[in-house]
Image (cartoon, rainbow, N blue to C red; front, top):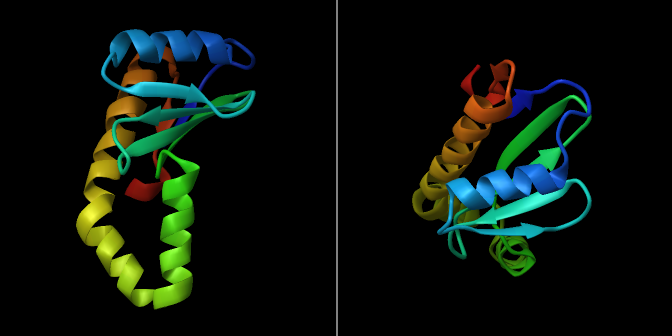
Length: 119
């Protein structure tokens, strides 16, 4: 989900504080100077990427270990089986998490939203 903002109007610390206050049950971790990881559990999480004119909220595995295990399963088992398991077991939780965080940031910070996955 892409959330348009006015250029250079918000810092990572402000977004971190707003998310921490609104989602007290979620763990929010700084990955680098532009990326925040919002973690609900080992499967459901999303990346919040701050750019100059926008904020991107992307569903993802919240830890590098989970990402590595999924990539390893694709390498060992081939593409089809892990992708089917991903869509059956993980995709719904991650999509719900992305929409929850994205909708909050859109209401709180955004000017206009455009979701490329809805097109």
